Length: 159
Ligand code: COA
Image: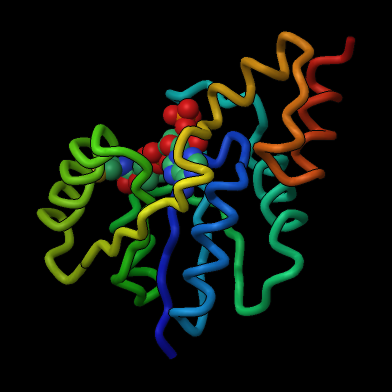
């Protein structure tokens, strides 16, 4: 069984992330979505909320598993015996950070490989922070995020 880990903060999951998972699901036998606690990013949604939103947003897919990531990604790889990591690339500026992340992980765990999927061009401008900013100012987010996320954002920022 060929498995891949798709790690991220997913605060919250956007249509861009969903598109990456949909395409990965066609390439791998199982996609393990690892939701990093990432307190340094001071997430709007807690870990359980982010996991629940991903599960609701990916209900149409099979062979998907959503789990919390509360350790180093490389330790998670060893614990699960999965050494392939998937990341989406939106724009050229993403590459610098992704290249560093990939090389740092590989320095810790030489067996790991990173696979990059280009984000679909219609989602290339979406980011979780921009979506949160729009919601915080009572803007409509439904074209950028799955319906469950749009509802959850409205609940976080009631009018
Ligand atoms: N479509 C839309 N947006 C996308 C996207 C896509 N396909 N791919 C990435 N993004 C955006 C997100 O919306 C998010 O936007 P924001 O910066 O405005 O919040 C940003 O890109 C990145 O977020 P995300 O995809 O959730 O991932 P991340 O960069 O926060 O993830 C980890 C980082 C989790 C991979 C990294 O911190 C990690 O591995 N942590 C575990 C601990 C560890 O091992 N640390 C050492 C690493 S060497």
